[in-house]
Image 1 (cartoon, rainbow, N blue to C red):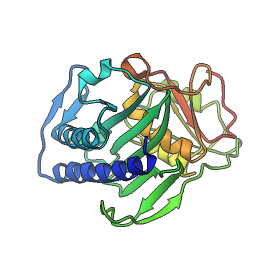
Image 2 (image 1 turned 45 degrees about the vertical axis):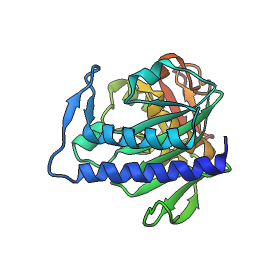
Image 3 (image 1 turned 90 degrees about the vertical axis):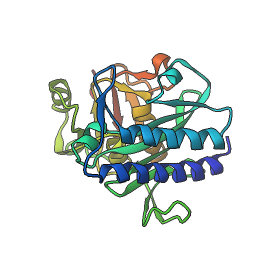
Image 4 (image 1 turned 30 degrees about the vertical axis):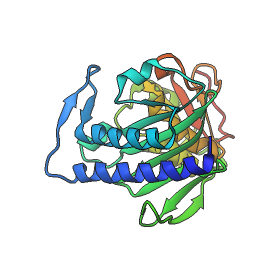
Length: 265
């Protein structure tokens, strides 16, 4: 993989998809339907997916593209692949709460080595550069003009005063019970893959997820967190979270800044 081309392409494509999503988000109304698993899908999901899939297919012919909105891609497998959630946080989108993201990642041999997370309504853009280092870009987010970038680095945690981030839409008692095993200074909530980015930026130390997720939900945020010095492990045995699993379904996991004294499941 040409990582310089990949970084440039992912940034351009994510910004274009974000612009399309915001065009629909800011309209007076938009269509919402239920998928077979009862989760919502909007015209923004589908429009962004079509845009991203076409652009990635043209830029990287022959590379498998796994995307949430194309069920036939979920049965395919390869050692390396691009994985896409064109609009992560659809519930947040529908409720007009802003915490939704465009997620694109490149996976090699089970590891998300590059990724981009763009939150267009929050005006936050996180990605790995050509060398795999994670940055946050600020500015106008113009596809052909890069703004200022700031290196991302995880916190140095204080296990007597941890900052924890949890899901807005998927918080449950099991998650609260697990968080209760830590000494917590404060908690915040966020939607979509922004939770990984808050750990990557040092704004949080720990993000546990005790609920169903798919690899397209996590791969881009995982890549950004890894590029900032963080880690994502399985909840049950603390082994690194791997990608390319059958059906692209994840186990429960913990995203964290190294130095957090992880508690057993």
